[in-house]
Length: 386
Ligand SMILES: C[S@@+](CC[C@H](N)C(=O)[O-])C[C@H]1O[C@@H](n2cnc3c(N)ncnc32)[C@H](O)[C@@H]1O
Image (tube, rainbow, N blue to C red; front, side, top):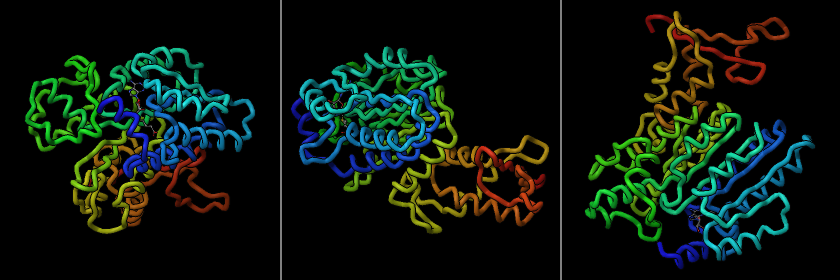
């Protein structure tokens, strides 16, 4: 992608960009309400901002974030919370447009810089114990900070969540370029690809956390494997890493993947639900497509949740943890409700033990709830022999 095309990209917003916006805005609404009720400081870092507004009048990520943050701030009772929206844009023309579009907002800081170079300094200087949401939406994988894990691990006091547009097919192309393999050039969409001028074997090793990328040429699952390496690497800094492919409607190929990272179980469950709703396949049918586009027998998949339940002689697993363990291994193939309905049936058949706290209601009856909160827990065990 040439510099002129970077500007042209913002002439008109395309369909797949809207999926990204939906995923971001649907999640941010409940997330911000929660964060503003408990935080002292909140930072939103948009590392690849663009100009804020497309030429067709549609809002870009900085405007969407700014609207949602302002709304959440105005609705909170927490008068001490401070926030800052930090938008970083490397291209000077787009940066000038961004500054102009957001100039009336005193909590917004626009920076004309390269996020990869700036991020270490930015993260290092954030107020202790702050909540931080980082959104990274590059072209290709150009400029995607390869040292994210080190940066996040160095600030364990921060409550960081990350949403990354990982251009997995762009990553594949970049891998092939590094290996000097031109056989796959026709396979990629020139309009969406920005060659990664800084790329090197070392940078790719660091970004993917492994050297296995050198073996993926020609593998039918190359795109999937690269996104798995990338996600596994992020797991070195985050407990929960979820991944949603966005497909090109014309050829059904994965265009990019939205990857979400968090250390917060509620956030991860919320995003899993969000991803399922955004995928085209959230229909309630026996056979469906999972978010990888594979045909799955939902009933069969749901049954495998028991593989994640410990036996009676082990430590029980919390319900929310169980659902996330399933999603991380199996992908977001069904709703939490499908899983809970199955577990309810297993409880009725006496095949699992469900330990609830509180065990009894105020009226002294045994409780039967299937959700967790600060005051309610559900722990599960499998009966031996099941
Ligand atoms: C895909 S666009 C982002 C679109 C934006 N998120 C939106 O929804 O409107 C990527 C943007 O990042 C900018 N960019 C590219 N490399 C960058 C880097 N290393 N640091 C900061 N910005 C960069 C590009 O100029 C472009 O405006």
